[in-house]
Length: 306
Length: 128
Length: 121
Image (tube, rainbow over all chains, first blue to last red; front, side, top):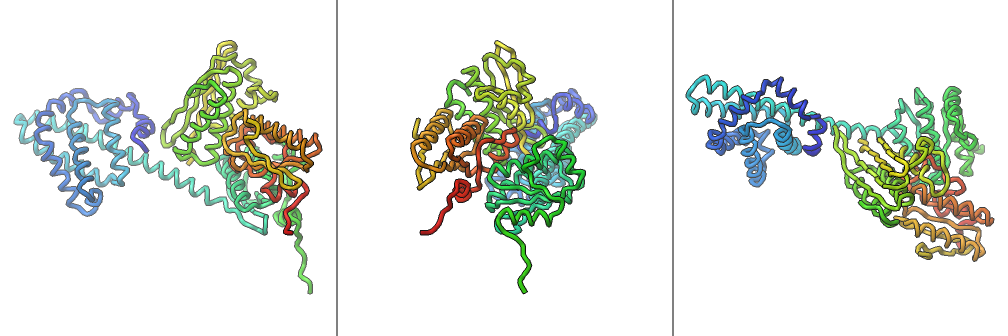
């Protein structure tokens, strides 16, 4: 997902940003304090970034993300910008978008939260050292460090949200794949296909069934497809409507559908839809459906002689 | 994109198809988007002779979509309710195209003032 | 415009293959061509292959259905083959049934509907 996608997905409008800042107790005062630290930050940027990557490169698990020099250079540059971004004195929509862009990059390279949480920890440690050393008034130093902590934690919350959002997208894609697999079309005989439907059929699955049916009928050049719905627990008007539409679509491509496994209840539901059922082939049992299918393609099951 | 000739109907259709394919919509979704676009663009051409099609990508939550807006300053649609219910069947009428398109997409809205013009907008989300 | 879509004569039947992006004018001209061909030649009918069409909107659907109905009135048949799955799904979802037009899975089936089949000599 692009970072812009995250901004919309996480609903990070101004209201949400304000709410989050309130919870992290990140005030304008904090931001002003951080802006005041900018000269200090600029002086130590290179050293902090080097130290930061020493940690990441020092562990096998994180080293693998930075395999070549070009990547490392690019990432260090990005890290510099990130680091200095902490001292800009702003935490608004533009700031958030910027942070999400960084998060999106890390998500794309596959870096998990545990690694960048560990990295953030190191960041805070490094900065604590610098702030303690450079700001002599202990109270000022503490306040500055607290402001920094608030912003860093705010940033971490964005990074984690991004990670979760990306995972949800992956889950969605996997669900699609699972749906694909759950409509297996079987070839019964030359020119005859069978699709036994098992389990609940929601409108999304129903759409998908029509599509699988059409694609397979054309792939196999089947003259007849049997749709057995005995295994579908609930056939409401929506599902019935989809079945009727599927039948119509199959007819449109020049093949025929036989609906089997139709109980009296389902038959009533279909009739109530008010569609023309006179041209539909329906059977209550699958066996009868197969016999009909065979006759439609000019074949018949006969007992072996002798 | 301007809609000012019969060729524009094909151009707009082609553009929307390219976008849908590039964004990874499956063939059924592409066909739905392209057909709805074709219907609505043709409506503008046939009834108003001039208009505009605006196609844009959307990103919201964990989904992406395509939004298309068709604007014209044509005669507007009288009896919008009946037209949307799919009542007409004369060859040059807007009716079938409108009600049909509506069934192909996820969100559909239409604003029409007689004598002033019409704006039809639809959104189709990518299904995972 | 007339003649943009070639109509072949294969023995007693006509065959036309429609390619993508049918502009309105081309579709209308094709309709004229088909009817003229059927009028002029002694033929049982025409098989129209639309496997090249990735979009069939209500306008094209109507033209095809009109061809079917007019052919019927002339005592001939028109059969459509090669409808893509996504095109069929879209037409059905829109609510069109393309009445007046016969369809077949492929050329073989289409010819069979016209009363012919391919055989070795």
